[in-house]
Image (cartoon, rainbow, N blue to C red):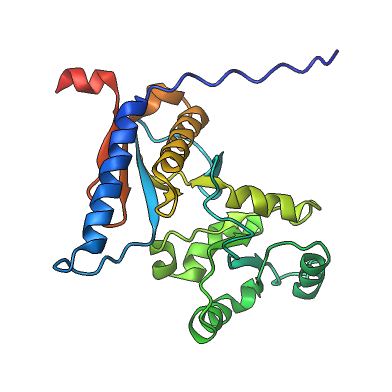
Length: 257
């Protein structure tokens, strides 16, 4: 018998499924109405559903790497979507993993990375990739030691688009597994405040699939933070241009209103 202790059970969800389904239905109805209306201005929506997380206290957690919350319906389908995924490697010091060796491994193991960029040429290569070649990467991966310096190197516009690179351990052989896990997850980046925004579903999904993803993300986020549900204040659901609809409010806060 193994002496390893079993992981603690996940706390039961405090979100009412009916309220969640109503919010999803309302957002989809709003989206259909706006997208079909001839009088309204064209929507600049990105096709995603977002969860706004409001916590009671700022959690003391890693702010460079996201918490990966597994979703029943992946945000990026590696087969159907043919996503553009970019790997940023450190070439400033002697590094056994060069751009050439990384490309060989990617090809040999059929890893779904479409571009490899050296950090020393980051800005020029990104401009070439996104502007000249017209390739906008869906996700960026980088060695963890690079993450603290990347926001400054990438610039404000890049950070504004919420394309924070995801840490990948290049010294482990399972690059493909790490990439696939990120594509199949909601990425919860802990900020410097109590509020975070998490991409949780696609508008192209059915209402049921969206609701299942939202519930999985909510429960996974609540389970991942210190204090768990005690530190959750609010959950709202929204589209890029819609109003935010509440799906959960802590009972104690409701009593104070």
